[in-house]
Length: 118
Image 1 (cartoon, rainbow, N blue to C red):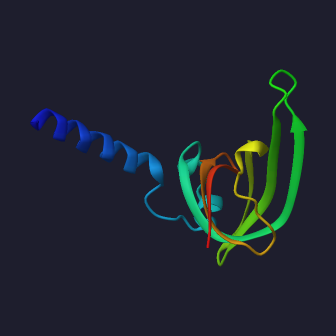
Image 2 (cartoon, one colour):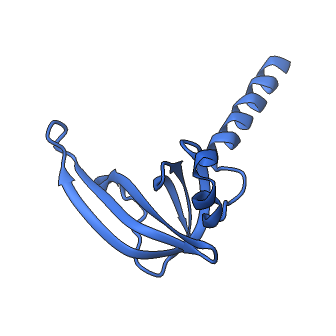
Image 3 (spheres, rainbow, N blue to C red):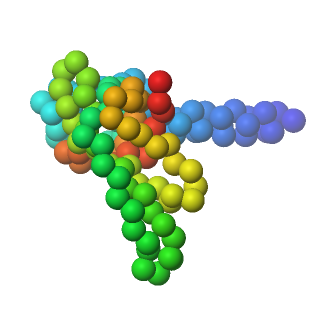
């Protein structure tokens, strides 16, 4: 029984670490210290701007992919982002003006892995 409880605590702890980055980062901080955040998972809150959608069919998989390209603006700055997903899986669809929290790898732009609309 103790081993089972310990295993469940470990699983829940690991899940919480991978679910969302700890605290949102101000965009100005990303732009001022890009080497500090490079390749790290960060969370940013802001407003979607300059939204564009691209569709394509995978050559081998034949699955339709939706690539959402946009900027996110907070009170300190703006950063470009892209969010790729299979269209059939019902990804969160964005539009200009949406208030969002996004999480992704920072590479000078954000490679988004999850989106929450407010």
